[in-house]
Length: 160
Image 1 (cartoon, rainbow, N blue to C red):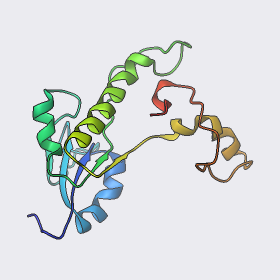
Image 2 (cartoon, rainbow, N blue to C red):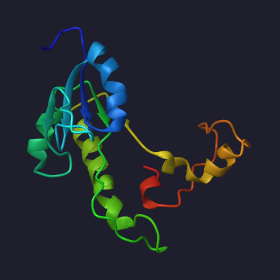
Image 3 (cartoon, rainbow, N blue to C red):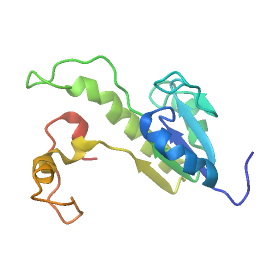
Image 4 (tube, rainbow, N blue to C red):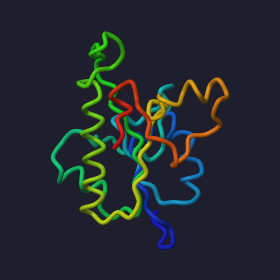
């Protein structure tokens, strides 16, 4: 049920681990539109209110309906796909991460076209690979906006 004074928030990747940490508080504060490619979490438990849908597949007009009318989008979805070997012979390669780049582009583009005022994009530790060793050995406490941009060692950590 939509309450007029509450904002509507679309959460992609709503059955994932990060979403599971956020949803209890989000459910108290917002009217939610939850989507994922399945309606169960990794333990097989049904996540209440999840609509099975993909931000990666299907025509824009179908995906646009998920975004239309939202005040914010919290993009947590991640396409794991089949693992190939990267150019260095280890880790994920460009082909593995390309669907995530495409999905982020689609989320941002549709949100802009639909007038969504706020989009939050989840990242990973790979966005800070260059600083990781300094943080782990205690030479740094925090990475702040004044620091040189990260130099990720993989395609997932590409800056947007």
